Image (cartoon, rainbow, N blue to C red):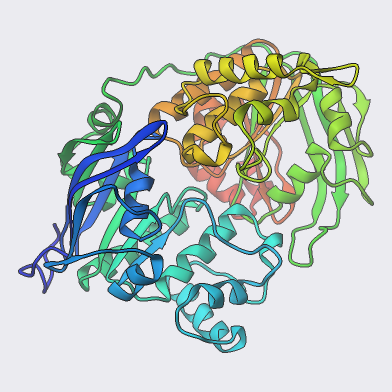
Length: 511
């Protein structure tokens, strides 16, 4: 633990024997955890290991079946988030809890126990956002914001409450490297002032850089503890998954014909605070993976809408899929021509939360024989869901489990697997490994590479530069709605991509 003026005090939080059972799973099995004053404590584990359930218990969202909680040396019962906030617990959730039709200020006003009007709250939002390097406009409507921008809202909302214990569940999933470093600087300052931080992340470099101590969960039980600064990525991965990861470099291959072509495509944003697309030109060939990097909010949302067919309307330029013009075709028609799509939002767009995995497989599986002559073949959908669960090691009760019951990483594996198993001619993937553990990320990467090797054209939009350098043959950058040329990965460096992200397309492309 880093030295603080309050280091001699009792631990801020002690969990003893915390147990939580669900009908089909034991989420937490007699978990013990201690967090000191001013400590940044990592909670690690595979998807479905019980991390989020444990943190929801601390925050009062979920009640434990067994065990006790001590807060600053006193036994407490945390029966609601309001109780947790009164104690001084704040939480940034992995899945956002924002009303899309309200502004940032209206959303934050609803979340605070202090009764303030959005107008009165706006200056405080700007102050905190600027201080912590997470710029957001209090008047902006949430539905017009990208995933990364919504993450900033959640973090600022929590920091406005000045908590004693800050729980962060995958807070940097869609933040840029610069924003991550700014956040880390802030967290270190807060810890030095006595705030305790519980940090859930699958990014091993982050944990080694930031955290004092790490507790590892495996199948709901504590499997070990570590001092991250004294560990390597490989040793931390072994603690999480129980074995060594099998790293395989991307093998070059000859690309085939153009499957997706975007020609000088421009369109205004459908949202007042969105980003217009300007003269987007791109080709993705059979048997290659092209990656698009960029800071969140630079047109990724609008480009995904245009390519997937979710936004059809006034535009300039063209989009063709397997040689056919599709810029005026909707999403279903494009799927009929061979397009697969993994959106960045899992719940609500990638999957219907209350529906079973079988029914969610059915939503995109018409071309796989799940629907014929107007008849739904549920047995085919059920078999497909089972096969996806098995092939992608999805931890769930069964194919009848509701999507909302899965951890974020396991739901992501199911959505990616569902689309890959349809063998699309063109695969469009947004943020493929957002919030998944290192083992699951490797599984998804291998599946995308295998899809590429089978002859599909794959386009990946990601804010994880390491991910793009791992799986992509060519990489372009989207900045202010403009796309740089897609260059071979072997000709690029992180520094050159950083220049592209800052808008230096012409300079970086010819550097």
